[in-house]
Length: 294
Length: 283
Image (cartoon, rainbow over all chains, first blue to last red; front, top):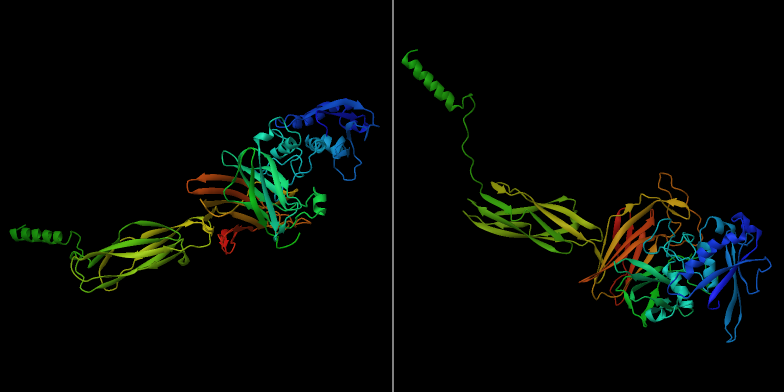
């Protein structure tokens, strides 16, 4: 979306009255969700709610809107409808993003769904899920789950957005000077000697107290390569996982041949040092196929 | 009473006194000293898996008329015969008077595939020789220390006993019984690259619920991996690094990890499996 302050408007939709007396009462709800993104110190993000507009401002008129939608094809789902056009340099530019919230997303699911959809408006796609099960109990390694992922706990945001969300949006809209203070890590994942396409890659950081925690997740490209930027200088490890079909958050990747039948593989050797302004290559990472197919 | 009566009385008293005053049998003569005295030099010995301890026995003869062959036998007190090897546990004591010496017995703690840390105990007993009056010292306690197992060159793994998790766990609302273990992997400085592959369990393998009647397994289309890495710490040590992982998985498991290295460091790509009985390394 364009740089500078991004303005949303509330659609004057009668469905709001399930939760608010007036559409204007949506303001605190939106401001709280917007603040999760605009408070990221490493990003340049300004989101503002401009007021209430008539329902006919639904789409493709330059008004970013937020509304309540209960007739979406997928029950319980909210959405971000992104409109783009070719810009002067021949690149696709987003000019409008309309967020439709399912009624359940307004009443009981907390800020998570709106924060998630605003993340799409800012240009973020879905993050990879946690390796293995989404247990109902926390993991000191994987929690909090990125707001841009699917899975349990996405509705609850505590102590700000997880690092994966913050780094992702900062790469799109960096605060001045931030990128120069970060480094990157790259590698090449193979399966049976061939590129492992669109495989989720978890980058984990060793923190000062020795705790290992997930920092960022990414995906390999068609060539099985990954390149993760925006990392604070520290020691990092790598975990390759299969694409998680449960909940199907990445249907396009699956259609394009994402690896769904590899074993979770985690690096246990000496961690890799990432330094500011430098790329750390971990080389080739061969993964193995599951003995049984999914 | 006349004089004789007094004397008889006195003798009677003396006689009674000589009998101990209660009329019992005469006291036997003092026991003869043993022909030989044998003891272990130590009371307890500790030996780690893969190492050999030399256990010393010392002897002193009083009057040993012929050479004596003395045996040392094991009494398993937690250890099993497969945990160790004994050698030199029969030794000769020369005949003679006031002869002293020592004998060395070797106990090698064999490496097994169990990765739990702990100790097994075997007591060594000096066997009484036939036909010879011998004074033998107390048993020697040998503590065999498990130090885990080595899946790869320069890597040692130790696991806590697995335990059922008391607090409830569920997957997408389906309750289940879950087990956990803490794995410690020590990598020597310069150890080759090390990967582990998580080979199981996968959903919906196993039963759900913790009671006598297990719940039917949920219908799951794509069989995702069924484990949770709850905690992971990494410590840098002078000799290398120590990775500590606490893992949870649904019963009955087993949790299965396979070690992969480069340059043949993990010969045979061994697997670590953990279930109710504990964790073991298999090649």
